[in-house]
Length: 344
Image 1 (cartoon, rainbow, N blue to C red):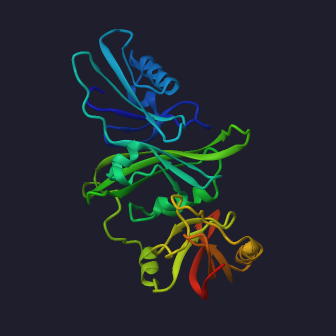
Image 2 (image 1 turned 120 degrees about the vertical axis):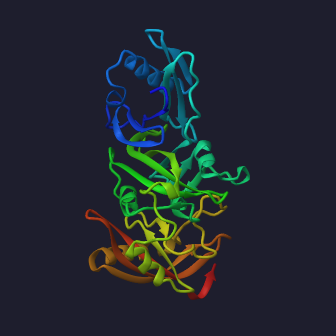
Image 3 (image 1 turned 90 degrees about the vertical axis):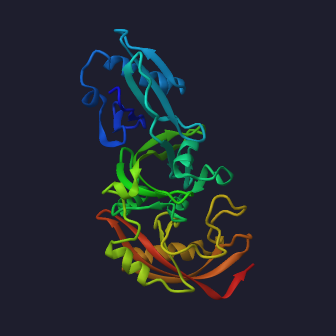
């Protein structure tokens, strides 16, 4: 224990107690704290330190009850006042100093608002330049700009978002392409929980932690620099100029991910002055496309989408039903600019 920091999640929800995500840079699959620490004499001190950090939202340092060791614990706080998502803790002799804490950061996705939030710690892990820090993003921005290189479990991650239920969990190893050009393997864990808003509504939120586990080239589980999955190769081969493909949630008609580069001019990010939207007069058409897609597997139509400047882009829409897992479907949508382009 003296050699490594232990990363513990405190997402809450259906779990009755916090679980361990990593010891040093070695991932653990949400095992109990007891299974890592054993039933030694300082286990109650560690569990007490975790509770104090979660309640107080501040670092804690204390001697164990026996007085021969000390416990140091730091909170992993999400952006925007969310509860503590995790605790990094170290137990060691009084005369020893802990090693540097591994890079880790908290994040959460509000599924009702379609917004993801990243902590400052996570932005540092990503190597994001301070002048480019943005803590809040549209959910679709999670997969944009080639920041994250996903693994074969990407469809499962999307399915968790589309078909979210309280208690659903996901763990995976992906690669982060940092701003400085360095590729780092990261492990993340998340859980979907119910929260009560100040207005009394119940919303689903995915709480997560991402932590660095080493150079991407040195971690066998990390995705390689170039896609090797056949499905990814097929999608890349089918790319065509003048058309843009995206994965869309059938229930909400919200963008989950761009398959190609984003369609120029269309509003889709959170940081713009105009939010993504379908023209109000086209909502009935969009619902009809969704119903047709669910019944026949394919649908085509024309929709006006919000542009970055607040105008409307008349867009041809062609959609095909796709399976994210055996229980969850989404729409693979192909967009092309209609003949008249932008309209009032």
